[in-house]
Length: 289
Length: 259
Image (cartoon, rainbow over all chains, first blue to last red; front, top):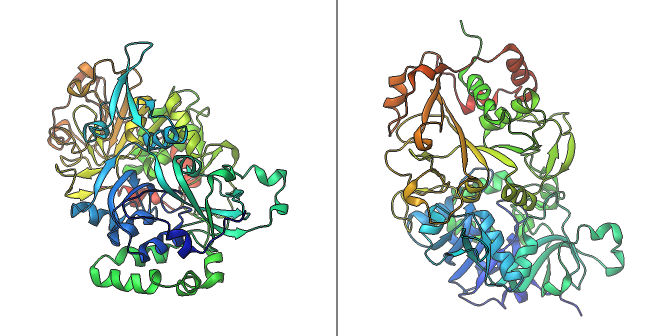
């Protein structure tokens, strides 16, 4: 059993119109090398589910997004995400905008193969009013009205981790695993990119505290050193503020074409060189909040 | 001659939001609210929990700006997943900076405009506002008190719940909604008017009632006898802010002094 494939092979299993969940948070530990590989294909019309950052923005800029399920999209280096903003202000994408906790609960429900999860989040707000598909429910134990947050099943989850063996025993060493586990459980198929692929014998008890979900969830593994760049993969490297700024400024069709040609429509090995090389990325300081 | 700036006055006023809250997670989003929560913990409410801004609880608030030699005093773990659990339990009081607030205390950080499919200006998204506001205490900071922030009618996208009877669903539990104070560059407001209507609690020095009302898109409750002047920062508070919490004076960039 060996789940390791090239990025091209892994991404070629994705079909147009699929619902894709993306792990990480804002500009932290996003599977950017997989996102770039996806942008290179002619597949489109995706429904994205994400604690959004440049993953969402880049797919919007590449016109791959039909619908976005989200609570926020931010670059963190600046609060707003310009490509996402542009797509929204031009009316180009459908949305389901919900509370970030509702999203967690929807993914969790899908992971437990349940139709919904119960919460108070959303009551009295436009997270319900603008999403008539999200229903309320009366508690069978009292008269309380609650939100029945529908499950958010995913066709695919794309995640970036620090280490994995070839079976999918994966390890996230960052201070916060975010909701990668919930994305993994909600998905029919999970593709992970990993900074390093290690032999199974290297795994010991101490390391297992960083193992956030079991390998049966992992379908495909892609080796991708610096695969989160320009987002961070703490403790290995921080986010690349200067690159995120260049990306942010590539908002007009001409400048986006230039960004696409320089940084996306190339091989992943070329990418590391194109953005400054291994030494440079390793030197990016982990952000302080 | 005053010996404090507007930002320092607001930080001290805002720190009052957390007084008597007990052992809750104090979250201040943005420089002024974060400094306010930090000041609360270092003065009247040491029992408050705070994070390093990422995934750890700290026993001493982390100063803003470059850390230099400062090493955060870690006391526990509070990653995002645990923040959700903490807030659903109600053990939190957040102070945020909404882009719009209406007369019901409903807040917006999502988008500006009336077409949700094609907004005039897309902002951050509703983030955790729906869940926060229905589960735990919330306060707000507004750096520019005007009719664009304090809007007439409802906010464009109701991200945070307020006390709006027309949005009350039958059977919806409201007793966890607890809006405490709004600190602006002109005044401190609270929700102690009839039916939680927004009331002027105190005016900042050299600000008059008319200025506050003229810059608010809805009618404020004026309980003249109980309106005070916003308490001035003490020497001790100023020392903590200037020497420890914000030595680089980021507060001045966040809220320039108006004198």
